[in-house]
Image 1 (spheres, protein in one colour):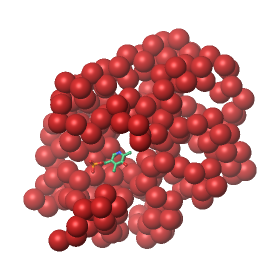
Image 2: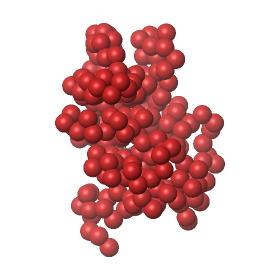
Image 3: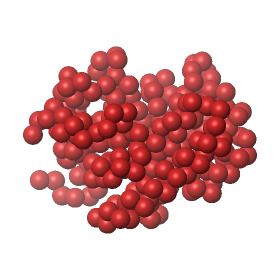
Length: 232
Ligand SMILES: *Cc1c(COP(=O)(O)O)cnc(C)c1O
């Protein structure tokens, strides 16, 4: 199937109001352009250098989302380029984003990444850590950050029940925080969960934004490299 057909197949299953982020990491600009011409305007990248080379090569009305683990020393490079950072996983990172956004007089839209998977390796705040962050009042000092919601990644498993439980727990936490800490703010509204293999479950459990890569663009050779599979 073509990129356009892949997108149409995904879109046909999405309820109104669920946004699609086309995860274009490791794929060349020509493939992004195909998705763009099929009507897609939100692209997700996970590497700073790759994002920096793609932005000037592609149409200016694309909204770029940063979805990968972000090092504090790279923040200044991406804050001017992106409309949403999904992967805020530390207070230190929030401080740095706030500082760099202030320099260019921008409000940086951010999602707090919550660790919901069983794997040790996934980044993010635990529910407890996130709760402490919200209750501490520290967020109030960040004038140049708008916290728009949460992002979470489920465990990489074929066990759909496990995945569903993880998404449910994040949705419950999202609702609790929204009705308490953000009761007076309409901007806390994004629940970013669901990837190629698990977005149907995520959508059933209340996702408002899915991040889909391989089901649109296919597996990339580079990606295979990074996860140490042989190229073929
Ligand atoms: C790569 C990536 C995705 C997309 O994964 P697919 O399985 O290719 O859809 C989504 N979210 C994050 C954070 C990613 O790094």
